Length: 190
Image 1 (spheres, rainbow, N blue to C red):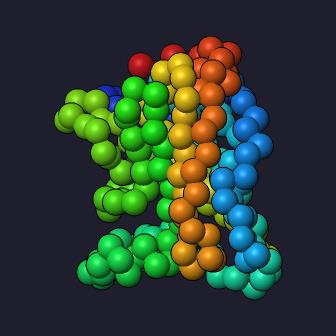
Image 2 (cartoon, rainbow, N blue to C red; image 1 turned 90 degrees about the vertical axis):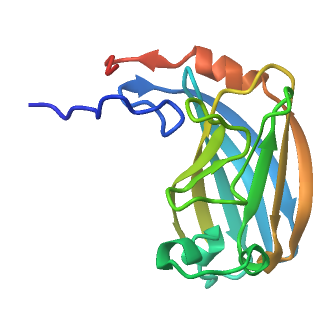
């Protein structure tokens, strides 16, 4: 017997299972210092959202990519920390769509979802889905919902602990939208 998807899972919570994504290569450096670089590698796009892959490479191969790197240590431990304390350690990024919708990992809730423009039934959001790496290189994946509209897509990032001050780049949303058009539903699990 096969695995069944939980009924009623909202589309903003994660990439849909049973669907092959369309892939778009980004290849853009978001920020770089003498200590580290943040690189937007690729997008796995689905009919309703996309998964962004960021690659972080550090000069020091022994750097610890623990939960504090993602700003999640305080969330996992239940420890109360100020936003400023977390911001001094964590990698931060935000995206803004042409229509003004903005998502960020700056204010993570315990479930990992960051909502900025939201209603109870359809929040715009960004969710950390996974990360792995070693020896100074780390790959992070974020689920972002909804798909952006056509037009500019602004990505901002910073990682103060690695001397990466705020930076901003602008991309065209068209490759993400085009990749989503190539997604294929293999198993309808609705």
